[in-house]
Image: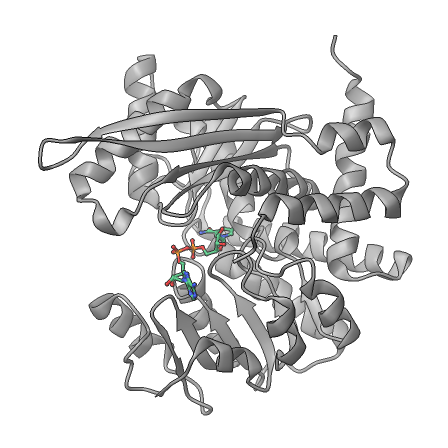
Length: 414
Ligand code: NAD
């Protein structure tokens, strides 16, 4: 894993500042998150003890709109990671043209070791502690690693109970029964598919019949395997935290998904051979999708990566040191702040519907998602061509210009 994800974002921000001739005052403002709240989260455990977890909610910049970003429950999460993820959201919402700023939250805990009751009490207490920052016009959380619709429903309920009124526009990724949007569940994966297709088409590569490898088989990687297979690709390898599986003829996404539902991992799936993650990266293929955690594609991995195109479903999966190696080798990278933006775009649709009090049909959500993702891809591709740089550098340049324009238009308070 990357030792310091915030340092990685700063490096990319500094590069974009240089590329775009960013006003040094605005550059200084973007190098420091607007607010960082650290909270203690005491939870009564099932055995009667009180355990105290540490949590954070960060607003990186909210000039373009209320802060938007997920909540991560993970044993390794720390404040630097949350700040980096919040900044990533500032730039991601800018690339997509969504009226949001960047936020993120995290609690350092191991959800696999918590009972359902402990998880609910942790979520509710954490929500209460960060609630001064939350609200439909202030900060709208959503799911991230190890959090889901059920956690968002507890968050929504806690906010509504403490405020004395329903606050459906305060959180997205809610289950449909409490005001979620149709099409949210698979939106990140759908966005990854849309950007992968757009990249293949721009590069003149055939999508149908192409081979793909995926790291991570969770909320993003799992549905993505189905989508890629339905779009005519062969998913030849998948790895998760416990192991990997390889089948040059293509893995059966349905059977693999059943195996994961039964065992919790792709490891041991009998529809392919066991493969180490290190070897998976080297497989000769057209598409590689990191869909697990940050820092997966290191300089070493980049040197022997077998794919022609990397589409970053995870946040920060490629280290800054790996970027030039991939560039030199001619591997095209569709960066996270574009590729995985389908989730936040669907969250934007959910926020709009919650405010309107009116649900959209599934095909309307899908059509709008396609339009936003394709539009953003076209903008980033054009910027990359105009500047003669990689898609990542172009995406950051575009985002930084949009945020900077908003900051200078609004002016500095007071
Ligand atoms: P998840 O918790 O549902 O799944 C994570 C997957 O990664 C699991 O299969 C896990 O086994 C695997 N994994 C974890 N550590 C690993 C390791 N060291 N090696 C190999 N595999 C490992 O999480 P998710 O929601 O699918 O999110 C995955 C990534 O996508 C994260 O970076 C997240 O920030 C990003 N993302 C998610 C969404 C979303 O809508 N869920 C939106 C945008 C970005």
